[in-house]
Length: 540
Image 1 (cartoon, one colour):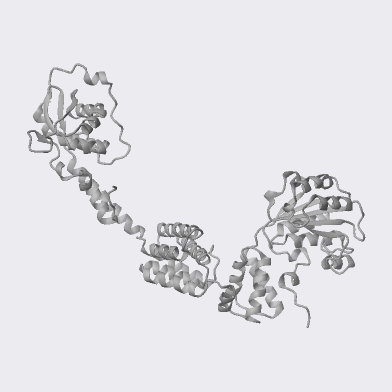
Image 2 (cartoon, rainbow, N blue to C red):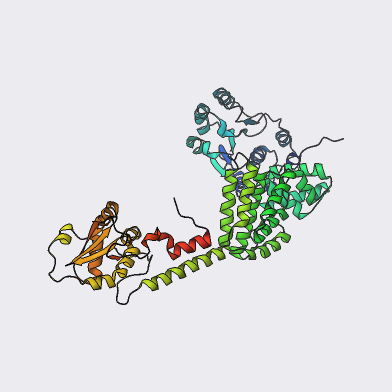
């Protein structure tokens, strides 16, 4: 029986054209080889499993090959075979994580003096170079800047930000990108065809997505699936092998949201945990599901979805049931749930509560209806408080300019001999209250608790039950005096006094006929609507 070799090693690229998804790197290197414009140091950076080390080995073979073809190694000469087998004395692969000390770098500096045994170049491939210590990098600098003509360095790293700028400036840098889903699927499809395996497109899609941009990871998952399924790979077997949540579960979840089925949400959590699924994986998949719905709803197209054609049609239908505002709110909610599970004492309880809340959310259209109702109430209130010829503006209007402040001297100074009419003051006092309510709601609550006791010349006299109310009016006396002057078109000021009998049957005109009913703000129509429609409660 022949020795088993994992897919990632068995199907390792042997030519630059075979490297998947990095044409911007491979084409540049081939041009450099063909024109003999090779640098003495290269730095390959990018995510894991995208071809950095493989490209480094191909470059080492191509520059040392005895008979290269179109800037590719022939893979048949003794030098190419030794490099492929890892037995070449001219190509040394060093793991930066385990050989990170200054002693190892000093040994490397000594060895670069010696000429290559067979090839043209002596090549040092240092993987995970960012793991070297600061002292090691410093020891490497001089050699890296002016190496012997027969030496080439190739560094590979997944964390480019940890490599010192002094090293970066001495290398030609190539950034490897995550491999696209279609390119991973194409590679796995070709391997399956060569191996004589049966696998459908949906199964290839699941494996490629699980690889998350890493071809090596996808090939490792492919090996795992083949071990379970044998030569015929099915969708259900892949879900079992990888313990993945079926896409249908997420469509079921949004069905529960549409029907507001809280019991169904709890049953869903029970089934997921019973099948051994991880809650975080489920939430991650649900976020992607909501993202797909949002993309279709926003663009009207399924072009940006990484799903099979069957599910693309389902997403197009499902997206019609939600608005963009709803989907954005759902995503924010699930994002919060995903973050909270990390610290939850009982993650299951938190997940159940958040899913029940998700299916219970009112839709954006319903909220808009409530807001429109409140706006209509505000409009009716404004109409009821408007008096012909007055200067009042709608209740709650924004951008109203405050009345100009007046100095204490102008308020308390000499006033015109012609006084205000008490009858006019009493008949239009509600107009004054409406304007105060519009501009300073807290002051209006205090003023409405007082009693208009009379008018003396240009002084409007108001009595209050305690010193607190009087002091509040005194702090706003400039504003009130200016407001009264504006309404009645004459200079006036307000005078507040304490009378413990205010609110009883004592003489005088009560400014607010319902002052003895408690806090008037609770009786406001807007407050009533908020209580009825949204369940608002007064603060303690």
